[in-house]
Image (cartoon, rainbow, N blue to C red):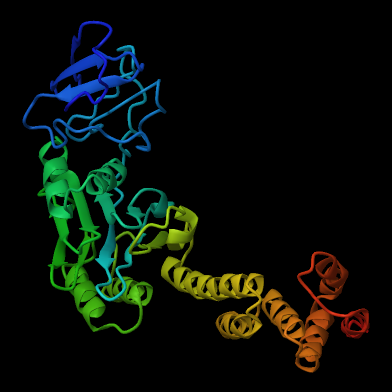
Length: 399
């Protein structure tokens, strides 16, 4: 890697050796207090490259610069002053996070996602990883969670999903107990199932359809073919098709131990620089007797709130007609959420359709009178723009 700082190093380069992989690492200290690291071993997947400061395993500039691969192939954490190694990645779990999952990209929209179910508490905190404009990763079996962030990092640097997974697996001494699938923003998809994953274990790779399904410690060998078939035949958006794939796995017997948790993550095709907006769905069922049933319920609720958010944005733009459409769709998805008709009534009142809004206000106030207390506050914040007489009519619906 070239030292882009034009100034010469302020001290001679020192030699260090990565404790985990014995990769030669040359570290130089520049006048800018940034460590410049060059990995000379040709086996390193990121040889000669610099990991950007936003890498979650790094500290900010002037403290730690450039780390290449943690517990997988050669990740070395070096501080700028060549201090001892710091912050090892999370330890491997003592028991297998055996599970079934799907990694997929929608060719029509470019959205990418992961969906998973397991007999393991909080599977969503370990298996699924995704980033808008970059890719998605599922890491499972005797799981090393580092495949997630490191896989995304390499794809962010321009590596394809197949190249990334090949490199990470090659540097992992525990490769034969890993099961990992990846898809990148260009739709290239790949999967690895180690020979020592608990059987039945296997996968189906749909290169043309841009998906991979994988499973281990299953009740039988029909699980992953059933998932692939269901995904290929399913209708709807990416979320719906991934849910159908999980449900097909469960219908064939699923995890031999039973079920406990599930998760689903879907990100946008391109990054807006606002991760909170790019993650369309980020749902977890941490512990539940029927996690897939609960996950589907949460998906439907999330759809309702996405419509609610769109309605709120429409109100901010004074597009009350669009707001009414979004709130209607939200109410269809979640008719039991009383807040939805309330905001629909507000949008109607703001657009001058007071006669249509009043029955909605009356219905809301009858179920939960506290919403009537919000009316004067909305007027004060100019989120409800009505004349005093109209406001009185609205408040009168409380009685």
